Structures are given as structure tokens and as C-alpha cells.
Length: 422
Image (cartoon, rainbow, N blue to C red; front, side, top):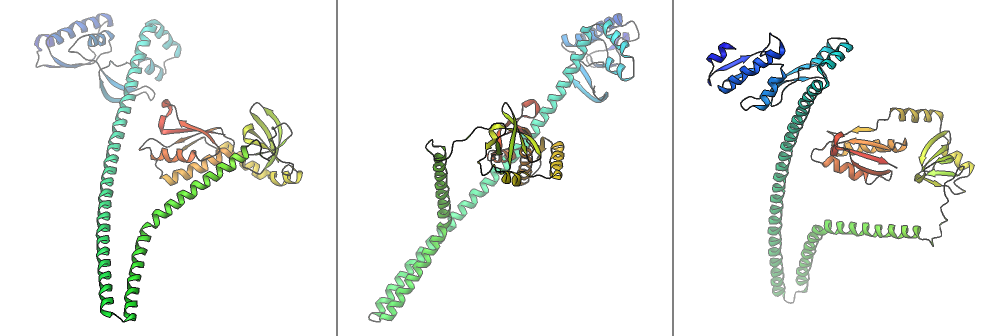
């Protein structure tokens, strides 16, 4: 250190390992800080390693000196060989002592001797390094996604330009065909008039000329008709759908009307014959707990929400009908029970095509409803959002789905859809 202070200047490079070591730590750290101050005043370049806290504080408080840390994975307890500039590093003394097998009571005594303030400060340093690594990884992922999104947008814009170009070409060709057809029509008409004038009293030639003109007119009408067929078909389909919706609304209004002839719906009570809405199996209510009911379907006892049950008519509740609709073999019960034990409430459809993902989600939701699962999660990722839109469009059409939403941002956010089932 004496030689370095004497000879260094603004063009020097100094390298020091464990600065101030080899003597009593308190005075060694003080001497190292005083020497570091002289190096900084001379504008010398250098890299210095140390475990002394006072040197870390000096670097934080003085311009010209900056802290750095070699990153360390404290979960795997191994070095990452990455230098991070800007924050002081931790010595991981407690963690390394624990890893090599030092007794826990010895570690506890050492922590008590050095004080909670030092331990907490070291822990905070580790947390800062960990959080910075986490957010740096996030930032890199976001930049990567942004680049992918920009490439996708550029690709779509190029395709849109190609489509617009194709549309203009099709319109130009259609216009040329129409002009050509019009010219041909005028020529045919003029030719027919000339033939009629030349034939004069020849009725047969006149009739044939008029017939040819009529045939040509029919051909033109057929061309126009074919060009309009798609538009007409689409309009007819929309009208038909609109009429069906009106019809469904009227039927629903009749059903909901207080003057309707349908019998009043009886409440579900213990011992009443019931069935799950939309299904034919008839069971018996054993007990009611709040909004849930325990129902015996044949040999299977299951929990069902009250709003999913409806009371059966006397015909549906006859012993013969119940026996016919609710008999379930013990083999089937075992399979259902095993399926419920092995059922996973999460499904990952990332990387699948749209139709593959929808098919997988369909089977997944059907199984969840069948097994009485209340909540499931669908992992589709964010990407361009197409897969998320397709899946949510499907979920909106399933009667058994009560609600769906994004997962909490800490657990995946918009990349995961949480589905609540009725």
C-alpha cells in the first residue's frame, strides 16, 4: 500500500485482494479506508476486494468509488460468476457456516454477538441482490416479448398490405370483365337488330335471333345471380338466426310468465327426489347444509350446490324411473373416485394450436364439472392473446361456468385464467 500511494497517478491501475487484511479487523479497516481515500484523490483506477463494511459505506458515500458484488445463489449455495455493479455484496457467512455443518447453536451465538442490526443489514443486501436479479430477468423477458410482438405486428401489416393489393386486383379484373360483358351485350343486341331488319318478313329467322338474345340475357343473369349468392346466403342466415333468437325469447317469456300454466317450482327439501339441471339421473336429498346438499344417486353419495338441483315430477320420481336412471355399478364408482383423486386443477395449453387447446380445455372443464370441482386454472400464456381470447370465448358458452378472470398478478396475471364452476 505504501508503494502504491507513492507511485500511483491518474494513469495507474491497482489490484488489491482483501484490502486491509492481515491485522486486527477494526484498525485494518480504518487503515484501508484512509488509503482508499488517497487513491481516490489521485484519480487512480483499480479493483479492490474486501469484506469490511466501512469500505462499502465509503464507496456508497464518495464520488469516484462504486460498490460491486459477485452474485451468489443462496438457495443452491453456489457462485454464479457474475459481477453486478451498483450495490455492495454480502459475505454469506451465516449461510456458508450452516452449509459446512457448523452447529446451529454456534451460529446463533455468533449472530447474537455481532448483533441483529448487522445480520439484518446483511440479509437486506442479499434481498436487494436477489430482487435486482429477478427484475433484470423480467426486463429481459419483456424486451424479448416486445421484439416478438413487433415482429408479429410487422408480419400482420405485411399480410394486410398483400390482402389489400389482392382485393384491388380482384376489383380491377371484375371491372374489366364487366366492361367486356357489356360490350359483348351491345354487340349481340346490334347483331340481332341487323338480322331482324335483313330478314324482314322471314319470321323463323326473326324468332331464332330473338331466342339467341334471350338465351344470352339468361346467361348474364346467371352470372350476376352467382356473384350475389354468397351475399344472399349470408343475409338469409343472419335473418334465420335473428328469428330463432326472437322465438327463444318469446318461449322464455312464456315460461317466466306468472300466468304460465307450468306448475310452481317446489323447493328442495330433505327426502325430496331431485336431479341435476340438464341431466336425467334422479336422486334423493339426504341432508342440506347451507347452500349445499348431500344427494344419493343410486349407490353414489355426492355434494351438490342447491342452485344446480331441481325437484322432480311424480313421474320422474317413480321408483322404477329412479332405479333405471340412478343405477351405477361399483366398478364405475371406483373409476369415478380414482379419477377425482388423480384430477389436477391446472391445465397447461401453451404451445398448442387453437383447435387443440379448445379440445383439451373442453375435456378438462367437462371432467371438472362431472367431478364437482369448484375452481380450476388454465395456463395459456400471454403471447399475442389469441389463445386467451379463444379459450374465454368457449368458457362464455359453457352453462356450468359461473365466472372466469385473470389470475392474481403475483401468480401469473393475464397468462392464467381462473375458472369458477357452478
